[in-house]
Image 1 (cartoon, rainbow, N blue to C red):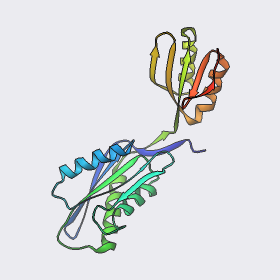
Image 2: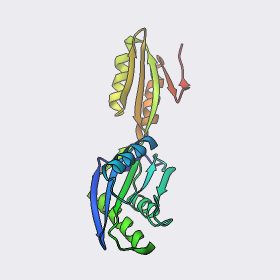
Image 3: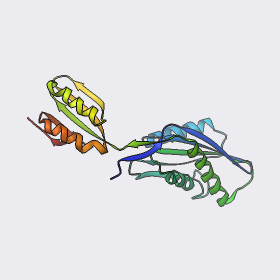
Image 4: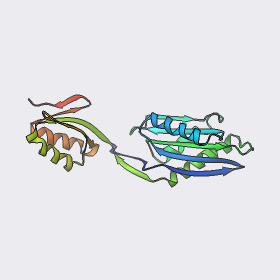
Length: 207
């Protein structure tokens, strides 16, 4: 079972030139398709004199969400080479946009493929690549006397509390690295004083 994935730690930029055309590549870490629209719209405004704003992205730890956009370039000459470089680098949750300023000389499909592939490789090579844990999120409820023990296991298994509500009882939303998930759930289960839900389905519940 895969327990980690690679993505970018931050944005980066690189530029490739061929026969007067400029290919300015921008790489971003993203979490959703709304991030894609935000970055592409910004670059369209920032580089409004450019001819094309081609891009590709891959999302999700399983990589099942992706798109390659040629933005008016010949079919398959821009978006696919960009996506191919993202995949060659083994990355996900990544967007690359290549802004092209036309230099007056046609490059042909092979030339365009080379330019978009090269500019994407350059920007990814200049980026900081990090390895992240695949995580699962659970909801947990316990009484106040058990909170310290719950938090002990949060720390032990390198989990993270992303939301908490400490009123009549203690309700926590916890993100757990997949590698430690089974051990953390088993530890809370042995407490016999906490309710744990995974994606709104009870894993176990005590009255």
